[in-house]
Image 1 (cartoon, helix red, strand yellow):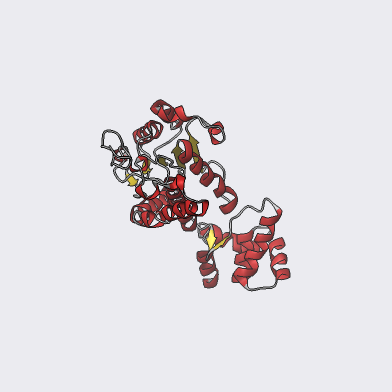
Image 2 (cartoon, rainbow, N blue to C red):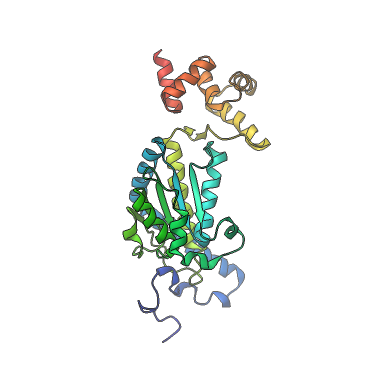
Length: 307
C-alpha cells in the first residue's frame, strides 16, 4: 500500500482520521508553505458549515422555544470538542447577561480536562450518562464529537433522550455513527485534517462556528440584542463599562453626557436607559414595557409609541 492509498472502511471510521493528499509533504516545505497549506484547509470550513445551516436553524428555534419555557441547554463533549463547548457557554454570561446555569457545558473528565487532557474519559458512556443525570424533558442537549462516535457523548445523548430532552449532535462526519441517537445531526463535511486525526484543526473550527451560530442566534431571538448591539452585556470590567456607554451613544445618536445621565437615572440598566432615550419615557415605564415585551427592545419601543 502506498503512503496515500485510501484506508479501508475497517481501518477508518471518520473522515477526520483519513490522510489528506494536499498536505502529504507538509513536513518538507518552508514555514510559509506550511502556513499556506493550513490556511487553505481552514478555508474549506465555512462552506461546509453553510451546508448544515437549515438543520442548525431547526435546533436554534427549538432551543429558543425551550429556553423561553424555562428549560436549559447542555453541551456534552470530550477533548477539544468539550473545550470548545465550555468556551461558548462561559462567554454567554458576560456577552449577553445570561445567568450562569442556563447554558451548561460538560466535558469528559471534568473541568480539570480543560487544561490537563483526560483522554480515556471519552471512552466512558457511563460517564456521559452520569453527567446527564440533571437533564430534564424541558432541556436541549447538544453532543459534540468530531468523529461522531465518542462513547461519552453517546451515553449523554441516550440519557437525555430517555429524559425527554431535545437532542442534537455536532460532528465533522456526515455519516456519524451517533446520528441516530439525536433528533438532529449537524455533520459538516470538513474532510481529512491537514494532520491526520488532529481534530483541533478543521473539525474544531467547524464546531466553534456552529456553536457561535447556535448560541448567538438564540440570544438574538431572546432579545439580548438591539440591532446588532449587545444590550444585556454584564459591565464587569472597565472595558465593558465603557462599551455600555458606547452602545447607548451608537443606538441613540445622542451625546455621551446625555447617555450617561440616562444610564444613571435607569440605575445602570442599559436596556431601560435605551428605551427611555428612544421612546422618551420614564425609567419605570421603560421597565414595564420591557417586561411586557419579554425583554425585546424593539417590541417595547413599539408598545411605548402606542401609549
